[in-house]
Image (tube, rainbow, N blue to C red; front, side):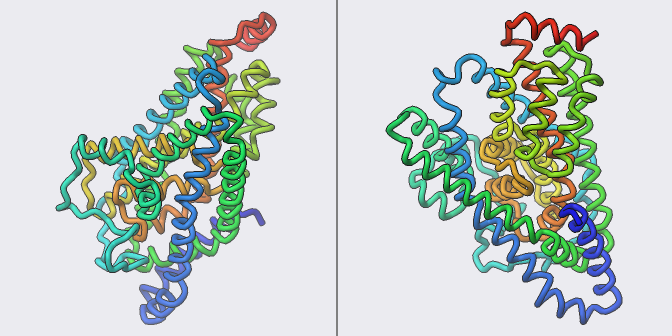
Length: 428
């Protein structure tokens, strides 16, 4: 049985178990929750938090250092990265607006004890109270650069960790051959951390069952509607994003027909949906782009691997939805600066998001830590429980986005006559 199927079954069993036991046998639920459900969920969340900082640092540094200097990247590289940045910002913004409109976390009364961890001094799992003063633009800008990067890593200040990682990666790229030893070490560290994430994903059905059972037993029937609204918000946001953003890019910038484009991408999107991995679907995506869409090999060979590690539009949209969802569940009012921080962190996180199943969980943890949203409450339990299910369409959109960007870049940069002629045939 596939991991996605087992996870879906675990979610359904978690809903039935949490609701059934809490309603009909609350005493038994209390015992099971205290000694099985909550501890298993807490261990999974701690495991994810454990890998966030080293994975983000190694992935961002490796990605930036591998991309090369602006001189090596050339016009195609800079245009590609600029396109990735713009589409990622649009995706996260649509996610935020969709969640605000749908309101998946509204009208749900959570008990005061609705937390998986009860830390004494808050820590990474603490939430921002409504009475806390929102940082000003000046304070936010000054907080970007860490005075001590080690301290930033130890305290989990993800904005500072990302900034240091980006600067370190740029410096490593500029050093060139002299930095090969460090580059190789950090690349190997990245491989090890991604393997850890893959190991954690193997147990996600058990974690999903425990997290959902705890959430359902804690908040009751109201939470079932919120779970449905959360999934609807993501799916609706993805549809809006694909139609408006990708549809416009395909029509106006690649000069192809959107329906024909999507038809050619079905094998790659199907592989991404089944595996929840951009990396696993890369060979199929490359084949669809080169053979179906007639994108030149020099463009696809550059844009697609780079997009696999830096262009996570589907994941960025889900970041916006998830942040608003958890804020609504906990009665936290997010201000303009916090929304901008969510978009910024999502953008920076997309650079270091691992192209493996569950990689988005790590990125989401970074955003919650950066804006002070609780990472140990019912909201994160629902999101982690549903992640494997939601991750399938998100990865499909990520892969589609890579192909759309490759098509736009090919149209803009490529001057090979036979490729242009092939594109004209495809438009007909």
